Length: 581
Ligand SMILES: Cc1ncc(C[n+]2csc(CCOP(=O)(O)OP(=O)(O)O)c2C)c(N)n1
Ligand SMILES: [Mg+2]
Image 1 (spheres, rainbow, N blue to C red):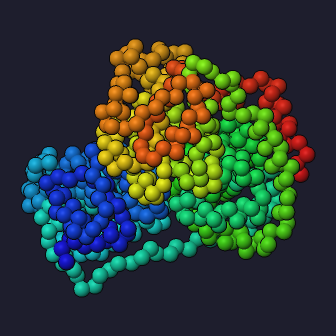
Image 2: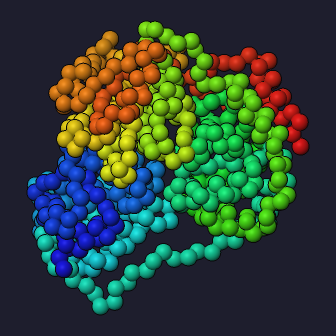
Image 3: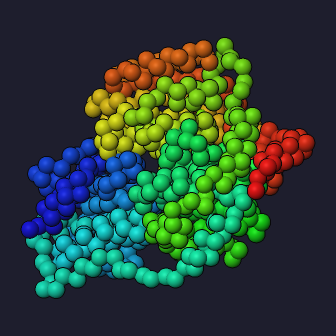
């Protein structure tokens, strides 16, 4: 069998959908994929292909596949691939490379280039993939591909890339007699589980923090059973916000720099944090001092993530599933936990109601972003997948969205490139066949606007809500926060950054267009979501509207802007612990 034929069979076996753009050095791979009957989605920019493959993997739980040509084709995928790496998303990238005899390494490695459109992909992608390899011979390709796919999917998943020379794609695979394919090895580590279990048993005000690792490990159901047995209040990172429905009694939602207020008060007043599958980003816990104040147990499969934490933290380098298994064993039937933290939980929930995200009066002149998110989440059904982009629109979405069980809500969390949401919506549709809500800024839309054509041609059920706040709102907010900075530089028309008329854009792509002018027009979202097919909805936000609350770097963890009076902080602190064990 030839290299390209085996590759196509492997992708078919993985039930992959290929997002890609063709070119001279990858033409044979696409030909084999086509012959094998693999679903191919041609797009208009390779950046978008990588992002679509990423979102496909996120929603389907399968391997994402992105196929591009040598040189500019593959260098265009860097932003998307980096996002998959930081968020641990399994994506197989296949890149065409110049013919093996044209590789500069075969002539003089100090050359910048030998072959036309040659680029050293292996080196370029080394720091943003789990595995990056140049395939300049067909020897042992079967084993190499299987090992590469296994790396993408196992342990802490992530993207991988094979850069396959054009001539090699067409060669018969040659194999050594002993194919040395070893599945992942087993490491033993000796965690003091009894000590950990005792800490949990003795805690008075514990919190469970769930991160994206829960989903990556496919432990959504097991975790639910675990927390429902312990009945400990649960905080969710953005990567895990869609693990629990908004109304789940244990769900106290988000915490960190841009979250509801009460999550941070809960953290500050807890006596134990049990962190499962979160790398505890600086966006969540910006100050490391917290670990010397509150006992913290962190369970993570990646030892490097534990290593970065201070010594005060109890570090459990273990798969979450194994950790839960041990806890199940040690706690028996969890009888001792029966409603132990009832008061702690109800105090937090009561305060959350007193400090809602949004309580402004409706406005006739524009749409309040929090009211928009609230209305959109009210009308969306359990089948919807929601993908915000980057900037204020992302934060408003995560602060305000109320998850219904089954919904997915995600973005490229850790890399957060503008332009992710639109191509990710395409990938998410092909990975799920579900209706998609894409929430994007007027700035971010421009970064992958060409994919409107992919959406229009395929008539994908994607509703594209464009939050028009006259430019780069996120950056404007930062500029307004710091008196040392001038206002609006590089952010809007005042410094030369302009945007096209969205209605004309919609017309040009032959996509339906609607405008939401003010808070009173938000009920139109119901019919918009019921419409069959793509639609662009322009949401008119007031220029200068902010993310609130938001922690300014350096301020106390519980004093997000707009600031609270000291008396109010004391009131919350007192009431959150009142009557607890
Ligand atoms: C590719 C990329 N370039 C630049 C940035 C830096 N950045 C973050 S948010 C933002 C402004 C986004 O504006 P818009 O898309 O209109 O969203 P808004 O904040 O207005 O909701 C910028 C420039 C980024 N995250 N990604
Ligand atoms: Mg904007």
